[in-house]
Each structure stands twice: as structure tokens, then as C-alpha cells.
Amino acid sequence: MTRRYAGVVSRTLALLGDVVVLALLVAVTNWVIQQIGRQILAGSFLEPGRCPEGTEWWRLRTHLCRALPWALPVVGFVLPPLYRIGFWSVTGQTPGMALFGIRMLRVDGRPVGVFTALRRFLGDIACAFTLGIGFLGVLVSARRQGLQDRIGGTVVVHAWLERPERGALVSPTVQLEP
Image (tube, rainbow, N blue to C red; front, side, top):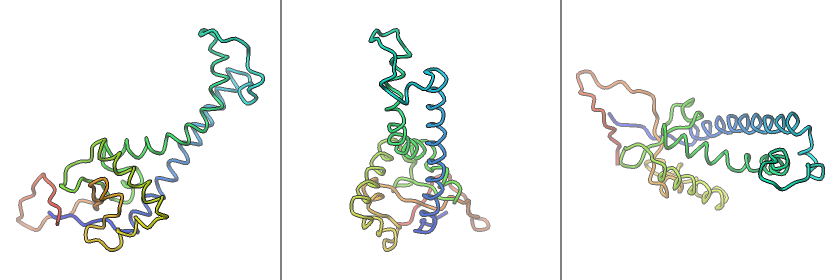
């Protein structure tokens, strides 16, 4: 069974789906952090000058009050890479990719691991620094690989189950076209 490589439209729609999911995750996480600050610290974390005094390790309220203002930007910065690298390495697709029926595989057809997903994410950053020129390879290459795919050694394929030809044996391995 051969696979079809995913093009620009399905990849863009999947990315937009992931942006929505990530925005909701960041918003919910920030809301939880603010609720912790309001309930436990009585709102004092919003004004660091109002934090209780003390540097002893057992003064949890003081440490939380000083740490929570940093938690909001850290969540917004750390959650997107963890989300993408985590989903790619565990399932081979993010929720947005699953919604639009695409999956990421290594070039040889094997599942993506953590290091491959990390290289692919770094390739996404490199494409962003080239003002999107690195993504243009998806339009012109035979395997629909952009710079990020070449750096990561990955391809993005349609994951919908295709019907094999009548009487054909179905192999559990994925055969990718060169």
C-alpha cells in the first residue's frame, strides 16, 4: 500500500487546528495559575512588592508569590514545543494533524522518535527565521518535504486508511514511494 504525501492545504489546516488547541491550553493553564495566586496567596502574586517576607525554604507562600509571575510567560514559551514534540514522538501526529488525517513518519517509514521530533521542530524554527521560504519545498518537492522535513528526516503522509486492491496482501509495514 503506497501513501500519499500531505500538501500545503492539509498541513496548514492541521497547523491552525493545533494553534486553537494550544491557545486553549495556554489560556486554561494561565487561568489555573491565576486562581492559585488568588486563593493561596490572596492576590499578592500580582504585585510582587506585596509578597510576604522571608527566605527560609519552608515558607511556601513566599516562594510561590515570587515564582508565579514568572510562570505565566514560561508556560506560553515552553508549552508549544512540548506539545508538538511530545505528540509527534508518541503518536506521530498532533491533534490538529489527527483531525485532518495526516501523520508524520521518518523517511524510511518508521515512527518518529523524540530526537527526530526535536530535529523537526528545530527545522520549523529555521523555516520561520527564513521568513517562510523553507516551507516552500512543500509546494515543489515530490515528497512534499519542506526544509523542516529535510532537517528532521521526516515526511507527512495522509493517515486515512486506504482500501487495498482486491486480493492484495496487506503488509503491516509502510511502503513509501521514493
